Image 1 (spheres, rainbow, N blue to C red):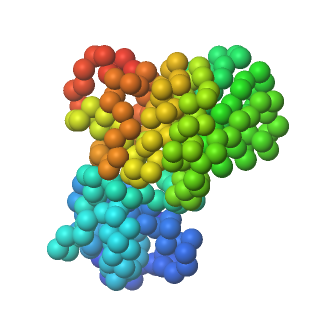
Image 2 (cartoon, rainbow, N blue to C red; image 1 turned 90 degrees about the vertical axis):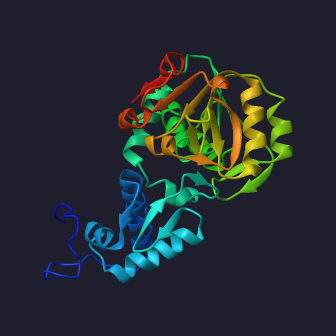
Length: 277
């Protein structure tokens, strides 16, 4: 469709509208809606309707759904993103969000792995991109709590793969909880690639939306010689419910170039940790 013109009603002017129904269309549309809110901080229904090319009624239904899932806050006539994340999209939906950015992050992060390394891959869609890159290499040892990641590595025929036990969480296809944490502490790894819901620069911490996932992630940090957070730019504009660790516990952060606009003025010690893909 043509470029977005703020204040233009998608139901006016006789232009063609995009189809509005179907679960796949709704997922894609809601993902674009969230991206727009993250970029604008606030958007009225009228402008979202024009941006998405759907009716205002469809936008309102999407906003009701997203608010019920704890992903946005509705206001009079519009909506804004949440600064504090308590829930997140499931893996299947997050795969399509910032997909190109995640692919670049995955490649840049994989380049940090040396031949012969033992690598822990946390569950998550960005780490899945790291796994996809590393699955083509030989001589590496993998440990993961991610069922998607285990399937990716096993399907590629990697030589050595260990999968933790734990309670299954469908939101991010992970094995987490106390059993997972206990299993994780039986390993030592050279590098950990960690998935997060938020890189909270203001509070100096990394965080995840679900407290049930944080215990296993803390155990991962304990066993890793180097902790590498992989996170697209959207993770830098919010906080999340469960604190994983302070930023001091992180050795590197691999993100996309759009994150430069999110950082502002940060300490030199933190700036040296960031790699832009």
